[in-house]
Image (cartoon, rainbow over all chains, first blue to last red):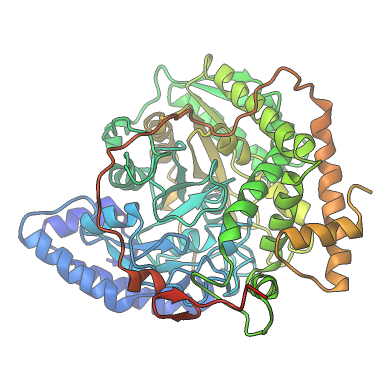
Length: 485
Length: 95
């Protein structure tokens, strides 16, 4: 048995039976990382010593009979989440040698549950990008084809799961950064409802949009991760104080009585033919499982990209003002007055895409342009949100492609920001509305690259999404395909 | 032209960033094409539409005013690029 190919629930069974120890399991991942990491480059920081120590503690928990679903499970954490005593870089030079002295709430929850930390996963700098090429540590490669991108911004988290360099990982999603890489890498990604998961200790990008979620090898694993990370946190006032169900209770094998909405605006010019075909076949498969499909309309879809690329950079320009070379991180060695120190430190510390978004956001918020750009975008955001509210009066979930194309080649879109932004055209509306959505594998292109199916639900309907995703996955088995590395 | 070279320089100053001549030129071009793309938003009449600033409506989050132990000064200063005597050290501010 190849231990690194196990899912969370499969490994859990072995650990529970004492057929396997967490130390053996963790060792097998460290060995796997040694074999493939030089090619994939999924991690920024590896923490093998920490991992073995966590595994030892997990084995003690198991021996004491204090086992949880995640006890002894080796995970990767996106490097935008604060981990006490472990460098947290956001893939940016500006954070320098930043080592947090506290844990993000969700990381603490995972540790308390007995999970094992293998390391911090690569990402686009400050989670800004769709390809993980904007990392100051260099790009991550897609395990299905090393010349293509793994998606972004949680590209390292997705590639690590697909390459069996961890069992599961945490990512973040501001405009598609969990779902689009999950789609590119042929795995399951879930972006929860805004407010479902605490963001205390998450380094902020777009505060009205950011959400943390799991990337896993199947839907059951996503449910198990959500059972631990979901819930109210008094330290995050945007987290919502509402009960957390056992998400595994939603995992059934049929879809009788479920209505799926198919929005006509998502099957348009610009979507690759193979993606279109795979998603239409998936809709047929859902119908075979007992679901009822209806055509719906989300009329403001075409405006979502513009709205997002005004709101997210505006929030980013404000959030990233804190990097001033004083409190933490990088300071330029260039001597001069205070203003010069700010400007030199920020100009040397941030990469080109981050600077572009700070500039765009500052412009959209500046005197004379606020009404024309930021306010206008926030008003259209209301209309996008209402489109979804109306749609969910006639259907339980909405299914769409996750991205218009499979993974593209490294370097292909990096010089053209608008082209790159277009990768997120189907994922962005979800963040603007604050609703949850998942991406699951639904086939492959003729070049052998994974294609993702997006399943969108209303606020706090993660369970319903996982029900549909699980039934489809069990029926089709796409999630069982693994890249040859 | 949505945004001029001079405006780009001003926005850079507000952003506390600096660029060389070539970068300013490239930014002017890129920001112009992005802002032109945003023009499509003007097609929509939003006269009576309230702006959304947060997707989930949460207002007035209160908590008890309790004394808690703050993080230690050493920890807060540990990541500073320059520090002295429990202070962040910065270049001279007052002339």
